[in-house]
Image (cartoon, rainbow, N blue to C red):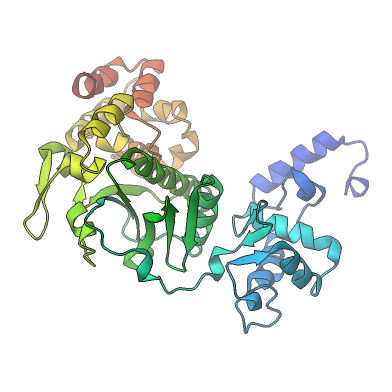
Length: 387
């Protein structure tokens, strides 16, 4: 490639130029691994004629991988299959591209490529049977705008992201519309798309001895969702709600959904069947010790009450340092233009976006407010949420 461009340009300058063009969507370029030797000057051709044909469903003309009919394919098998349709030197490039787009994942230990999009739609109900000896909690991540949905292929890409984060003793069961994570011989996590792709449920169930580990798994999946939203559909804002734990335990098809504010404000709420559920039951598997230790470490942004967010909107909508400065301090400066269109609720939408990641907490928000010298907003939150 370098020989076909101005030879006075250094390799480093050429790489920088390619990255700028890639950020603008003009070309596709990755500056790492074998892909660093290629610049794809026609993204449409790459998606349609290369990746599209590789992943085309069985029965489509020139379908290359789908006829293997398995979400897990041995490395030597898939390489041999692709080599039937292309130059053998390009097989590694195609597989690297598929991995970079989170369309598959190479399990190096098993020498197997995982393709969640080839998973069967049928969910094996025997893997998620009711168990009264387990405590359940659930989070529903819904699109704030009712016209938004999770994009096609989102769940498959999420499965790839989560699989890469799992520990050695954690096993994933993949299906077309959901996936399970198994730890210690039982399924402790269920993630599924609901309401025609408008919501995503993360359901955990734990024994008394491993509630902390299960809560960490739920946080991990929510963080993976937020990271994938940022790259695949950054204009989507997520609203985090709470699912009735007793309905989950009873495997109710349409469980009661609470807002975080409802749960926190009253410390207990009632579901549609009239059963009262406490904050500890709904958020911490009924484990008061877990609540105490978890709350002492961090308070999720989603736990800020609605009335306090309204006060923050009044404070941060004007002044020398506004919500725009806060967005930059929180690392969300790229969203400022989008948030301008959300006025007069730009502050609320900023906090909604910041709160999508469970590890981005009230404590980090307080630090950011202090750094931009908005001590009025800092004092407001600190007085209500820091003991």
